[in-house]
Image 1: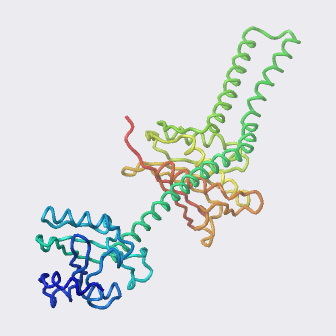
Image 2 (image 1 turned 180 degrees about the vertical axis):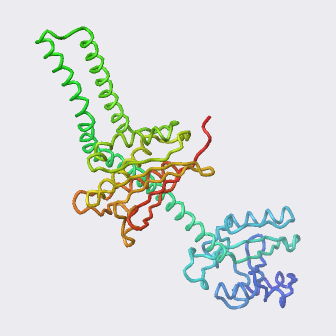
Length: 403
């Protein structure tokens, strides 16, 4: 050891050893060449050495990982400025690389330190290195940063999942509309049967009168007019169905009564075939800014569910009622039928995907699609409740005044 050769220098170090030895920081007294003149008990404990064992040694010889040139430069800077310099755990990169021996499961191999270099004796070029252990704090910060990064990654995945779910919902809505196309084509056939019969009758009448030489100009133009009106009706029917199947991404202003008339128009043949009495109470002054086709699809789906339910009903007093009124800032739509109601055990499941009470032909998507459209696309709510044999579907939509 070089202890004997440095006794004179050590004696010049005026240190209150009782105070310094028991402080909860590491303290070295070193010269500009990094020779150790003093260290306290904290250093002895954390470096696992005896007291005075390192006196006279070069700091970078004891701790081989020290960057001697960097530390000497920092020491000389403090002496030249005659002012303390400070280095945080983020910037010091363990100037005094002490192995961690007290913190388990740490993110770091070496103690993370705040290091202060204080001029101690300018004449003898001595400085005090004061080490504050920040490993616990650095470890917490590292764990926090890791959790923040995980949270960001989870959030990113959540956004991807939300986009996937949104796309799946849109695909389901599109699939539901396409699945309804077959039924709609059947409805078109019902809608067209009577007008086509009118056209056929008019043509047959003109042929017979022509053969009997009874066809006058008045009868001819009357028949032409009737055929023209009927063809116009057929054209409008096609346009209505085409509009229904065309996806619309832009809100439009619609009259609610007119929208309900269209939904019933699509279904009136089936309503008539089942001898169902339809009645409505609608405020005809209600206008709504909404996605017209999606709301129309929802209304048709709900009424179609009522029609399907009536197929298993034997009584003849069949009713479907539809009402709409403004209530505060909302528009409340109610659709009622007396098709037997829904069992309480399954009422809470009717909006779940692929849940159906129909044994064979049900996809279980109808009410799920309605719920998705109304709650997510239209910003409203939908509820179903039963009172004895009556099912009441309530749709609440936000409203704003349309001028």
